[in-house]
Amino acid sequence: SPHFNFKQGVLHAEGVPLTLLADEFGTPLYVYSRQALNDAWQSYADAAAGRNVLVCFGMKANSNLAVLNEFRKLGAGFDIVSGGELARVMAVGADPAKIVFSGVGKQAWEMRAALDAGVKCFNVESEPELERLAQVAAEMGKVAPVSLRVNPDVDAQTHPYISTGLKENKFGIAIQDAPAVYARASAMPSLKVVGLDCHIGSQITQVSPYLDALDKLLVLVRTLQSQGIAIEHLDLGGGIGIRYTDETLLSPSALLNQVYARLHQEQLSDLQIVLEPGRSLVGNAGVLLTRVEYLKHTEARNFAIVDAAMNDLLRPTLYDAWHDVEPVQQPAESAQAQTYDVVGPICESGDWLAKARTLALKQGDLLAIMSAGAYAFTMASQYNTRPRPAEVMVDGTAFHVVRPREALADLFASERTL
Ligand code: LLP
Image: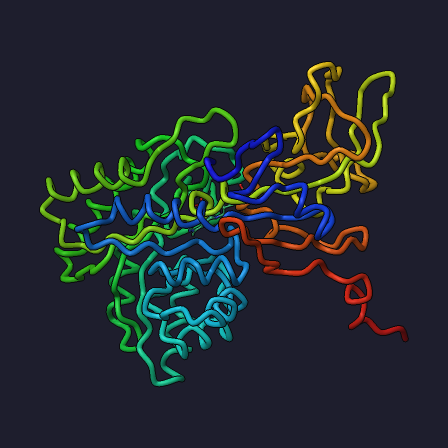
């Protein structure tokens, strides 16, 4: 990202040296660039210009209130997956008419909260969920806006753990079953069919899986029209990938240009298009700062033991994910590079952040784990009774703590002995 750059040998976030933030707030520390968030948003806004497109930030990627508020001010809607996310995003004053509610396991209280708020749409993922939603809405005297999330059975060509549009996955309603479920939905007085939804996976770098899914959805739209069921919007989910290392990139405009080419062919360009990007709006807008506690040279490996761990950034452990590691201060030319595994202090062999990296290190060095703006803090835990890191947002030469480091006492303050 152009907003994380070396100046005079020191890695900066915008105009702020990361050494300064580490000294001020300690490590591990998440640092976000406000301008990077704005730029990422702008690439969607440019792609959407002149088109009826609603971009709903997949807030599970980064749900810090400061991040949500930036996107709200920029005009974003939000894709939520829980009552908790609804409460968070309402806390920054989001417009409920731009909120879509996804997820396979919505509970009745979550449905009630979303109906009370007046969300744009429920992305319904099964028939039992449809029945429950109809009942909850009827009890409240409301009509729930509904989209069915269909499973188009396409291969997103990404990591199996984050691929969601195959028939083996738990997500969505099999596309061949959708017409019958839509018929059922449109017959229920407490439901109103408004859309059609899919989400095929994450960290997608090619347009073809989207177009494969789109083609199947468009056939379904026609089928529904012939059943007298009109769709107002088509939600293509999230999934656009980011560059962690050398991935080729799919841009929002490349995706939307191709989508609209297909819509025009089918004379369906009146449909509103909804997107639910998460990672691509925040992933490269954040880094995780960590300090080298010890260097440990064993017969088999060199370890850099740092103060961040799998509880702070789970992606390497969980997905074998690659995050670039940058020394915040460029080492002297004379410094000897070695091959290191960068590992945390947690008592698990799976506790690693990077493997086999060529780095010239000494104890006390500051490292930046790059591309840590998405699925990073939001997946953090307190395992080993480690407080979750502080989060800081940089804005030019200014910086703001947007979440202080958790205090040790708070970690167990609400617990009771017998
Ligand atoms: N919409 C739905 C229904 C989703 O399930 C997701 C992500 C998104 C939108 C946003 O997808 P994105 O644009 O971020 O690809 N923790 C994993 C990623 C899990 C994605 C889950 N669903 C990771 O760290 O790679």
